[in-house]
Amino acid sequence: MNIKILCQLFIQYLQLEKNSSQYTLNSYQKIIEQFLVFMEQQSISSFSSVTYFDVRLYLTTLHDKQLSRRTVSKHISCLRSFYRFLMRENEAKENPFILASLPKKETMIPRFLYKEELEKLFTISNLEHELGQRNQALLELLYATGIRVSECCSLKLKDIDFHIGTILVTGKGNKQRYVPFGSFAEKALHTYIEDGRNKLIVANQQNNDDLFLNHRGKNLTPRGVRVILEKMIKETSLTNKIHPHMLRHTFATHMLDSGADIRSVQELLGHENLSSTQIYTHVTKERLQKVYNLHHPRA
Image (tube, rainbow, N blue to C red; front, side, top):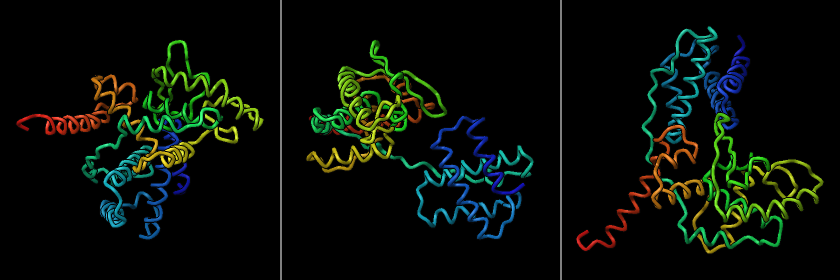
């Protein structure tokens, strides 16, 4: 079968059978396209002709590009899955990536904001203006719930239940979960929905049920959220860079610091594996160690 057709079938398989997110589909598409370039450079005409030696050579090219261990692992996982699909379709007899070992994960301590830094961000927005109301609601909701930016941007008006203070979030693999939000987020959302959002809809003659809108009245994108946060940082005296995921890190860290159990935090974050949540315990342990060293007479 044609190489490009096989690639398209694999993406369809991920979408329809594996229910993969759009982010995963785009990521896997790019990885396979890069592998196709490698195959062309090595004059490899078919997927079934790829050997373990070719795989090692491919991984060497990735290391030469100084890609992170995490990125290299993603390449291996993607192509390993791709070859499993090819074997199922009888387009390959063996999986040359099965013996490729995943690099050891780098221990990355997630960056988060301190409460004092957050307070500065919460006072920046002009609540008399529709975009200021939107930005405040966005900031409050991201910190109140710890949801991913992609999850936030896909929220609809109907997903908010003000009576019990929860939102219905659609996460990775289209898995849904209910996440509570507090009084600050509730107030900011009410102000934005009843005033600022209506102005954005009317001024741009748009009609949709997306919760967060851009200045043109259309759905706000994750990139748009990044730009908003960067502008907010510039208006404060804060010097550190901020990315949207930092608010998710901050939510998890502050919850654990305040005594929340890790299983509850795992459920709120929508993590499938507890190991994904445990990274935040390193932050709290580090903080406790600093407090101990600073205040204990015999530290």
